[in-house]
Structures are given as C-alpha cells and as structure tokens.
Image (tube, rainbow, N blue to C red):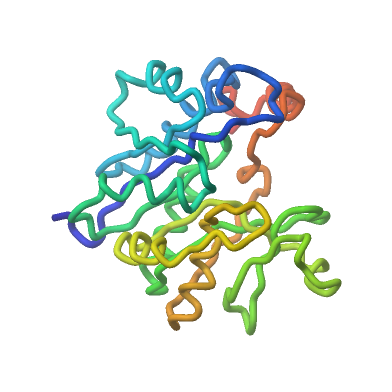
Length: 250
C-alpha cells in the first residue's frame, strides 16, 4: 500500500504518429540526440516517482527494446481506442496505490520538472481530484478550450464543438494531468465512446469530476512552449533548430 502523498507517472507512448510519415514510432524520433520518450522519462524521474509506467501500442516491440534496461514498467494498449482507453491499461500496475498519478505524453519533450512540481503542490493544496496543465495562446486555433466559471474549471471543449464565444477563449488544455489514483481508475469506467471518433477520451474525466461535485484545478504554464508536442517531422526539425534541449537551452 502506498502513502497517500506518493507520486507515480504514466506516459502515453502508444500513438501511431501518422503525420510523422515514418515507420519509426513517434516517441523514438530523436531530439538533441535523445529519443523524445527519453526526454520525457528524464523529466518524470526528477519527480522521484514510486514507479513509471509507459503505455505502448504501435510498434511496441521497438519501444520496449530501446528502453528495456530502464527502471520502468510497460503496459500494452492493443487495439488503440483513445487516451482514456490507454490510461485504463495501466490500472493493474497500481493495485494498492493511493497517491497521485501524473499523466504525460511521450511526444512532449520540453516540459520542465518545476512545472510538474507546481502542479503537484496545487493539487495537494486545492484538494482536487484532477489538476490539469493549461496554457494561453494568442491563436489557439484547433486546440480544445478550457471552460471556467467564476475562475473554476468546469469543462474542456473541442474547437469543432465550441460556440463563437468559446472560440474566443485562449486557454487550452495541454494534456498533462495530476490525478488522484482512486478517482482516476474508478472514473475511467464511466467514460464512454459516444463521439465522432468512437474513442475513450481522458478529457471526459473532467466533466465526470464536475458532475460529482469534485474539484478540478488548473495550473497555467509560464511558457507555452513547454506544452508543445511533436506531431510532424517539420515540427521536430524546428525544435532541433531552436536548440531548447541543448545544455542551457531548456
């Protein structure tokens, strides 16, 4: 049984990365000489977690082979039915764990440990069951918007489903979360796939928490670039040119 203040990390790393147009799993593409997933693991270890679980799917044997000597556990998502379905595959790794689970994306290498530590602090102090990392963009484009009422997070909404007023919101969801473990795995069972993609979304946990009268907190990233994921070879090339991950660049 874990102590209630314990921290563990789950990294979602099973996506196909279709837009990379490569046979290599997206998280194995390199930035500053290190696979994207390697950078995320380094950030995760800075939290001194009880365990790190990596969710693998597409070409998982390549990811497992590359990181087999690391002190991490793997959970397999096959077939792949969305981020909520991916997280559910980690449940067996957390039997008896009563602490906090940090959810990270394996293709977002720029996140700083201090940002995650601030999220953990906010999560504890606010009594939230979910604390999400958001950021503010001058042009949020197709990103999902964060809906607040009197300062409190009440929902997130996809851009395609947003009203004209909601599209004016510049606060977006980064896809990085702190969850109470007990809430996470019980609430995942209530997530359905009644959406256009037929997938189970991790973001649905926000509305589930709100409907139950539970607290959802948010931390706004000081630097929006921290939340950037890599979706295309061009984006990866641009990050390499910017040199944010060279010594002193992060």
